[in-house]
Image 1 (cartoon, rainbow, N blue to C red):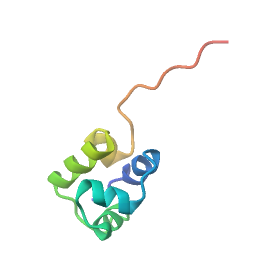
Image 2 (cartoon, one colour):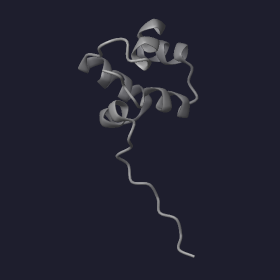
Image 3 (cartoon, one colour):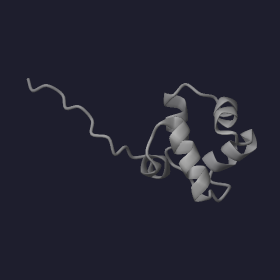
Length: 75
């Protein structure tokens, strides 16, 4: 399974792959393979990455935010 929101969330946090690996206590190679969809991701890793990146598991998996975005003022 590819975590579609992983790269975007990591970049929004201003983290490199190495930094995310260090904070999440995963190997750098694991993060890279997960971002490229080359490795199956167990639920425990999904939970850990979502927690470290401060996003929902749904957003991590789909790349779609579940947080409502503020509406723009009417003109």
